[in-house]
Amino acid sequence: MKTLEISTFPHLDYACAEAINSLCTNLTFCGNDVKRIMLTSCREGEGKTFLAMNTARTMAGLGKRVVILDADLRRSSIAAVYGLNSGRGGGFGITHYLAGKCEMNEILYLTGIPGLCIVPVGRTVANPLPLLNSSRFSRLLNELQEMFDYVLVDAPPVGVVIDAAEIAKSCDGTMFVVKYNTIPRRELDEAKRQISRTGCAILGVVINQMSFDTYGGKRYYQKSYYYDSGNAKMHRRHSKPA
Image (spheres, rainbow, N blue to C red):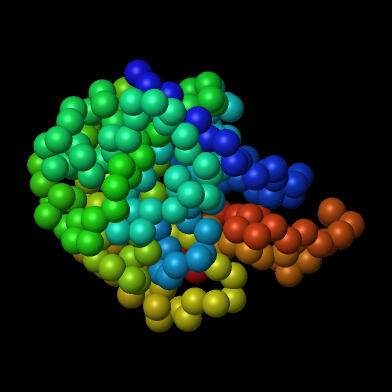
């Protein structure tokens, strides 16, 4: 298996790291049958990719076998933001596999983090729906589920394109990432309805980019915290988002 180095992983401050630790603990309580987890948002820039990458790293650090699947086939940002480097002989990704250009072992990469693998996008495409709707996509997730404890799927925003709803059909649960105090309740409700129609369970909502003094934790930490795309907190682990 080839290696895809992640060269740009941001340092997390104490508050952000503890919030992600809490989130990972909550995910383990979802049950052994929840292994393929999609992360999505209503809009761009809410921090879903940040949360997916850091959740994957944290769970791998806890001894879990984790793979992160880059399923944002139109506008992937993982390679650019996290400095993915496959070195010589790399380049295949999920779009190549879904198009029948390669096999699964050619798109599954080790990382420099023990226990963490990644399936990169390979190349972006303008219309990924035929690829996501193919039998190869569901087969890929099924095979990854057998190999790993958790498959984290970084999907596009559900409020922007329909891709996330298609991806959800092959997942066990969905986690929404919502930027604090920016998304109207009706918009979040509509996003929830789109995913619920697929039969995929809603695991919860992560409130992102929120200072701890806003949440009421200022007296404990004796200061407020703010981290760009950080301070994610699991708000609810039921089907109705807050």
